[in-house]
Length: 83
Image (tube, rainbow, N blue to C red; front, side, top):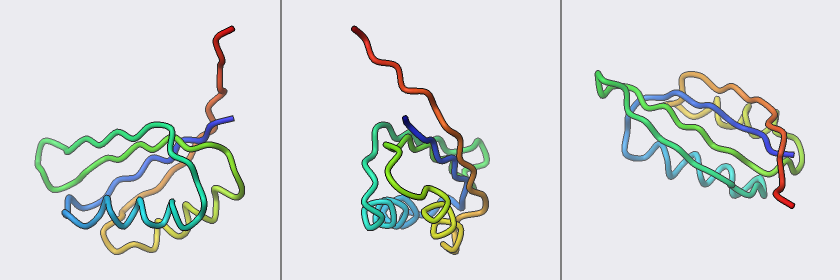
């Protein structure tokens, strides 16, 4: 099963490397990564789909502690495999 993290934060050049470092330190494997800057260029939306390994709530809690992150949400995604 896959899980998706949705983050919104300040559009700073150090935000994405810090987010990726935390995910790597938690031993998570990234399936997809999408970033979108809002029209006002002040905020960035990051969507990360991860393999479901371990406690995603802990990863989300660590990401919320980052200064530039404003919101973190997670959702489970059913994984479909082609046969």
